[in-house]
Amino acid sequence: MTDTTHVPTPTRSADRPTDAPAGTAHVLVVDDQAIVREFLAEVLRMQGHRVSVATDGLAALEIARTDPPQVLLTDLKMSGMDGQGLVRRIREAFPAIVPVVITGFGTVQHAVDLMREGAFDVLTKPCPASEIVSTVGKALEHQRALQSNADLRERLRVHEKLAMIGKLAAGVAHELNNPLDATLRCVRMAMDRTQADPEAKEVLDLAHAGLLRMADIVKSLLTFSRHAAIEQKQEPLDHVTEEAAVGVTMALGDEAPKITRTIEGEVRFTPVPRGLHQVLTNVVRNAADATGRTGHVEIRGARDGDHLRLEVRDDGPGMAPAVLQRIFEPFFTTKPPGKGTGLGLPISARIVEKFGGSITVECPPAGGTVVRITLPFTAGAAAAGA
Ligand SMILES: Nc1ncnc2c1ncn2[C@@H]1O[C@H](COP(=O)(O)OP(=O)(O)O)[C@@H](O)[C@H]1O
Ligand SMILES: [Mg+2]
View 1 (spheres, rainbow, N blue to C red):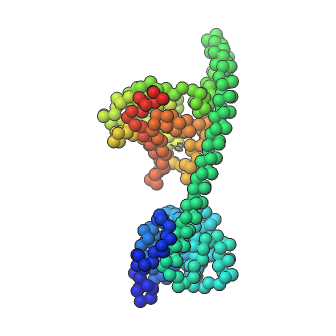
View 2 (view 1 turned 90 degrees about the vertical axis):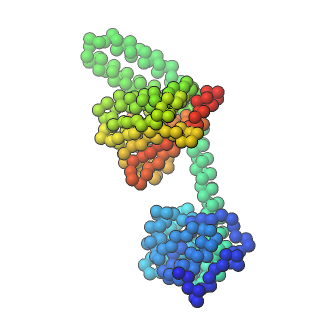
View 3 (view 1 turned 180 degrees about the vertical axis):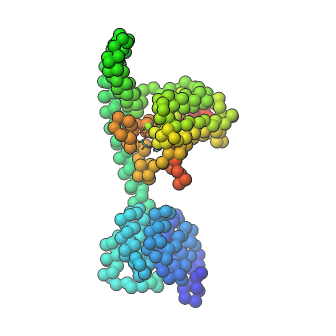
């Protein structure tokens, strides 16, 4: 509760500086004195900000971890970890959060030390509401600038990588495609002629499997570099999902998990482009790789307004945030060499986008992974004409 005998009650109009920047944010207020904490929180809430409060540094770090704010407004002198320690920890662990310190012990040296530690600004108590509002506003602008720079850098990095890989892949895959095809044919011929010799058969089977894997990678690279046609022919959703489920089950044999399909009657025979089969096969295969044979993978299909929504859910271990962040990056894989190419999801995203849809991946706190693919019902028609 704000005690109006100690601190002025903030009022919406009078305290708002005329140059208050537009936009609101999540602000974390840390102060061990309830009255100050409530005052600061109230001032900020009146500006439309969402405010979390903490009474000490440790509680603040926990909030920063679970529900990160854009701006941290912290007192300096607190029991346990003080404001300076908190700013240091925040800068190290959560560089996207902009810290502002508010202190009753303001010396110039102190302020300089705090800024060096990474504080965006240092306010001295008692601090008028208008100054709090404008400083938090500036901190927020600063935070947004940092964020959009980081986003931009990240997008550029991925874009450059994509462009480079596209060029490389197109060249190499093109060169490899023909000799690979010829070698496969030779091996198949030799296999036909060595039926009677078990040793030779075994060796040729191995060579054949290796060549198939190479052909698979070359095909992925060609799809990735837009040199392979994406199948546009329409087929009922039921067929496409069944084919993916059966294909993955056959490919994994004894190691396959239980794969079930729950397709709403209404969309069961909705025509979808055949290229979706490649997407589903990869996503289901990823799910199966994650769960192992004791797991469960479910493919769901339903209407969602004027979109078709497909989900592939698994009860595997999910992904750490650092992995989840990178899964659409070409060549990013956590699988052992020879198992993954890291092209499955980037290719899937490219195909789904080509059909005018989108793909997202989420690891819910309860566990497992959910891949959502949303397609407009007109996807096939639109893509066919593309
Ligand atoms: N259902 C899932 N559960 C856990 N991790 C997954 C899942 N789907 C994808 N991943 C992660 O994403 C990475 C990239 O997937 P992908 O692009 O298909 O390449 P690859 O399967 O060749 O590794 C995988 O190596 C894995 O770490
Ligand atoms: Mg994959």
